[in-house]
Length: 468
Figure (tube, one colour):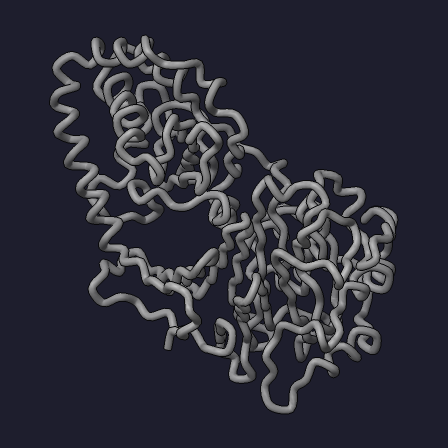
């Protein structure tokens, strides 16, 4: 059942989104007939009263370069109801179709920024079939003068209809160029620095892009955001958000590797935990109550997700692959993906994180490091000591000097425990458990590891840690 925790809970029906999309489409279609009579005149009239985009599009986050990345960045971007991947509505992505005569890509999915800047501006990121951002043409996303969610009709009349008048209904290339002059296409970035996570056995990627392996067996601080900027963890300082992971050995693996079996996070009084039970079932709890993600039978289920919304927090479950996306209003999004490991017949958790750019600068601590744009200082202990750069340390040194220092004590635990399980056991294992410090696997062994941990076989060494 859904718990009664004194906050508003809502299951958003996909049908509402689709209904609104149909309404938008019909409204725009009516406007198109008016525009089509003299689109050039309308485009010119619009362009003559436009400000230079540099006046209002400052401080917009760049788009993630790939579709995988933007799916993780749920604190920053949300799916565009009018252009969804595998969308089934008849006009899906109609507005983001590229012009064939100019060899432009068409979008198969677009995402809109969650927040706006001080001018009420927002941005849209669109991606092609290859999963890469589109940066030119009518298939690309743009800097929009008005946020579609905050000032809906202003966005329609000042951003959408001019696109129709200048590009969709006008064959003059100069008219379309005029639109892009005032609504510039969005650019992508791989250097945003706000993606981090852990996958596999486990591989970690810090928020500044440092990748390392740590096979600890205990309960650890994954990410904390204190109320004061610092390079060390101070238990006396209150926290905006704290999250922890529990890692345990995978049975039957010769090299003594560990994997994440439990994740927990707390913001104020709301504690959410995701647990792989002894029966290999993924259980989600909010405080002391189990959450059940039931599809709304009245909704159109082609978009197979369920959303639970709370005060300052939401959680989305993909009913197809079980992936859970947790988003907090402070600008943090954490994606937890259950993965079945064939070699051990067990379920483990892959965890990916995206942060708002507002949290850059000594606001984050934990196993995924500080977020300040400097990968060289990522490996700091809990007390703030820099143990060295990734290139100067062996896997044994990373384990002993860095990873184990982020273990939590029993009194700090956010976890629930099954029968005969206790926090003190995991605290003791942090120093007792010693993995085998092997070099990275190669050849056929590497292929087996990637397959077991759901890492794409064609990914590079860096991208295998970056996204689930």
